[in-house]
Image (cartoon, rainbow, N blue to C red; front, side, top):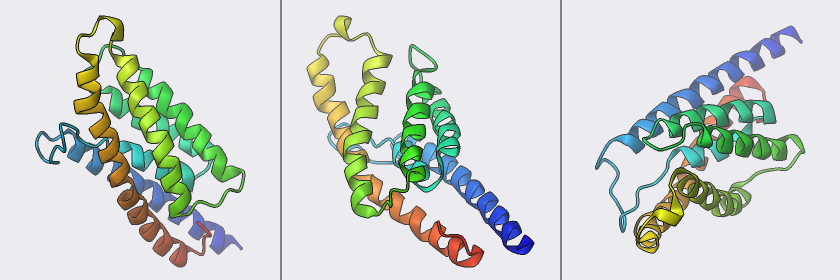
Length: 180
């Protein structure tokens, strides 16, 4: 009994370390200029699929903390208001974590449905809350040439992030005897 609890704690610690390493790598890839190719003027927001994946794998309180950390990294980008992404991603992570705590089983199909709905909302909220839209000229061109391609690119990258995490977490669960 004590040995199994000890193993679960070690594998939970290893999962958290894996999440942090992956967050740092994806954030670095996202911020390096011209590393990821632009598709029709948009680049993916790689932190959002990771937020969804981790929030749906772990519980609501860990997802809340994870959302706050992801939002802090997103707020490091030059914008007018600091704290908006922290709030949005923290609340989003908590609500997604509630799905896991309520017992919903998440597979690739449900993850894709959630990512198609949640990621565009978060990207559009980030755009709308960080810029003064009524005074912005040519907003339709900005949305058509940058925001919509960013949304599509992020949604297309999401399954790869999810499948990579599931494969690593599945191998950890096999070794640790955990059901995640």
